[in-house]
Image (cartoon, rainbow, N blue to C red; front, side):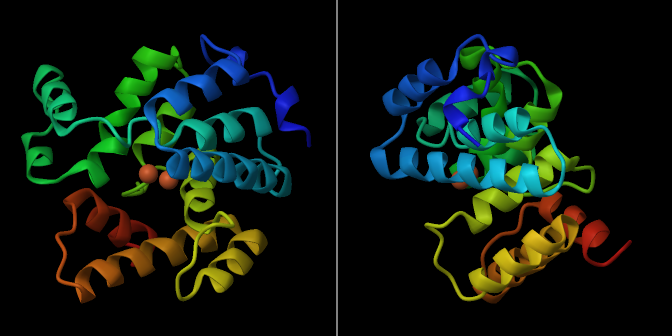
Length: 199
Ligand SMILES: [Fe+2]
Ligand SMILES: [Fe+2]
């Protein structure tokens, strides 16, 4: 599929070229290139699983749009939108999705909840991820630039069954954080309990 032909303006104030320009303005090149690979991977998964490639590609392209904003910007949004104050105990790795979707909404004029939820949940997951959110979550994890133990298996599983991929990533991420003594955002534990443990 020729991604240049996808009509992102159906869901955004901007077309693909304009979104690319905005991503380049706000992200370092390494992160920008990752976004392009996630877009490609999301389109590929969308075709496999019979999902709208425009929604999936756009979600993949903009999922990290807010990644390199200063902490102060996120903290201001958490306070002004009266989001859960627990969020203040975490950092940009959580905020760029869980709070960053609000930046995407206001700056890129994207109001479709499927895309906004995909961005919101791309790091911590959610028991309520729809297909677009699942694809964004997995495309971010398995895009061709990723190198970690198990990535080959993650790619194989995901291409066979999207939901099995979601389970694999959720389990692996929680295990990694626990094994390395890192804080786990409570929402990520809820995701694990539902998606992996079936509670
Ligand atoms: Fe991200
Ligand atoms: Fe990402």
